[in-house]
Length: 131
Image 1: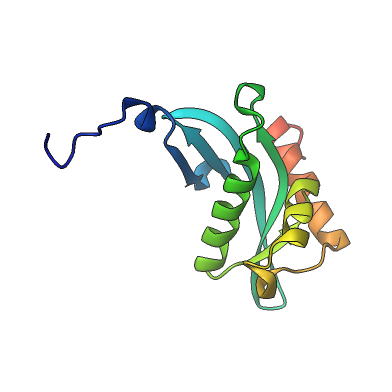
Image 2 (image 1 turned 90 degrees about the horizontal axis):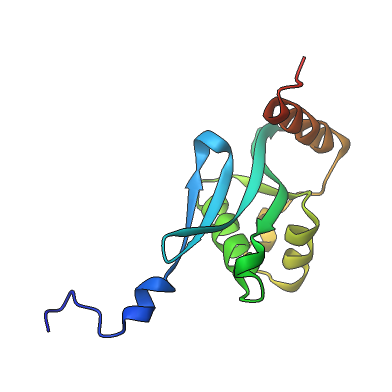
């Protein structure tokens, strides 16, 4: 066996990857190369701080019950902080996850009305109803 061979063929099928898709303003989670879910965001600048507003997280039913939403959220928030951005948790799942984890505690901002307006605009753009 070479060092690149995997002795467990199931391991590749279950490999989990979180990656950002900046063109679609989202982080994706893949399991064995298959799309398992995503977390949507939009960005704003406020008081000289760039913020990433997480507003919707989805895990496909076929992948439920594996803790993937937590893996996705941890990866997305860590990448956000690494990029020097602050986190605004509009998504109820992200907000709940943050209450139970202190990984990025010093990088979280409170949700304000202007954040909700930014989410409304992002949704309108995605739906093609922006004016």
